[in-house]
Image (cartoon, rainbow, N blue to C red; front, side, top):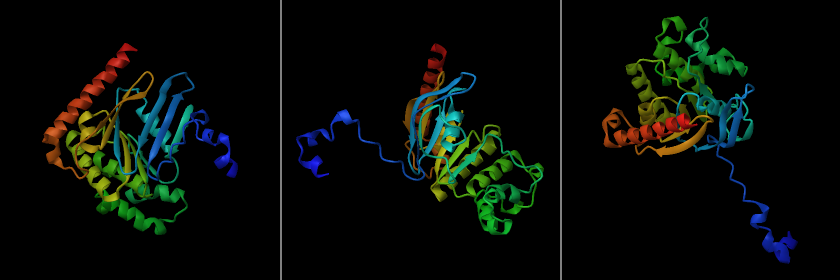
Length: 276
């Protein structure tokens, strides 16, 4: 250490020849993909050199053409699949919740037992998990349906159970892969409002995949637009709205203008796809 301070070589200790300083580690609840590429065994290149950082407390939506690697990026963040190259910082681990496109509920199990599942896999007894399960169901408005079975629920209620199952582990990072795509517009709007409320209450970082520009603008603090062949980020749009936005935001000038900007970026992504 003394040599480093007094030697004529000390000026070289921080020389660019030694490379750039390392990036600071992402905070808990944050996630970053650094120069990530993913090629599947059949040769399909899903992602190429994707750089994406989601900071703690953000709500970031990923939009782009079908096949642009949005779901693949989400699965890498969750630790469900590994990148072919590049690095994942944050993400993975026990404090990540994942909501799939379909509710994927166990049809033979009650609502309570479906939500208990992640804690059961952690060897937590039904009794020990009861308070956490009931709290998660209360958050999504299903306290009166603990003993119901999936066949007795509407599509929107099934998705609420799926969200409760992700929340029961108290995730720092919540990953959602087009969870409302199959629902009717009224139910989708209602669940969008509920998700805004949950985000405000819990402060969880959210990464949300959707094909809907309008949904992405209503929910997000940032929108990342991806182009495919291969998947990569081509635009990053900030949404100028408070976190506790309500239905009035849907008719505001800021909403309309941000929808326009996101739509133009999405058309640009599709044009790049056609060009390639």
